[in-house]
Length: 247
Image (cartoon, rainbow, N blue to C red; front, side):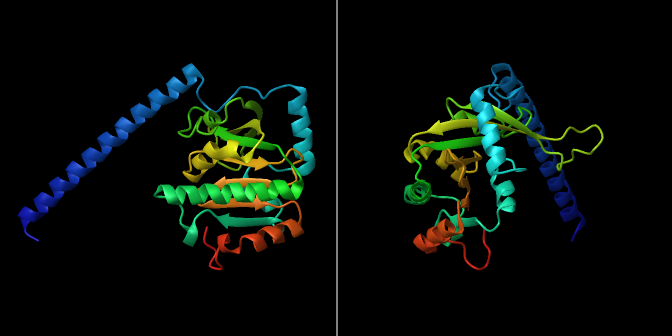
């Protein structure tokens, strides 16, 4: 390589570095502005205290009875009940994101079909959604709450497993919002957001006998019984992950 080419490569590297620095700096300033705006207009997903009401107490007692020691998240519940857990993909060949209207319809069809199956198994008619959200300092703050109109603040979880023991660094907090729905069709917007990884929540029946945790690419289900788990697998074998263990 000639000295001239080395100079050109060095100059190009400097330009790229400067450009990246300006982009990141601009992003940081933009995020600081958004964070303050969310705080001012209360658009974040956080709250100071959960609701102190009979329905909140009833839900807490019910949750602790059904899922002791667990938080309302798919990963926590999956580890708690591995024998009842199963996973379905939302698109053929384990494709993660829909790229056209036909694929988006297929994602929604699978979610609605599985939810209706679970409702039929449990004999339920109403649906409860527990949304997971974050503080205004988090880039994802408010992403779930805004798709749950009429939801109420339930509980806060302090995750000490994530740098909670680091001096001077506060452990992250997760905020849970609750809402109820009469039909699976009312969850269309939420399910579409989950498929795009811009909302996180679980769905359950009023008795909390099962849990449905959609994500971008599929869904984790905690079935009410082993028989129900096998029935779902038998009904939709083509939606199950392959033996290669794809997500």
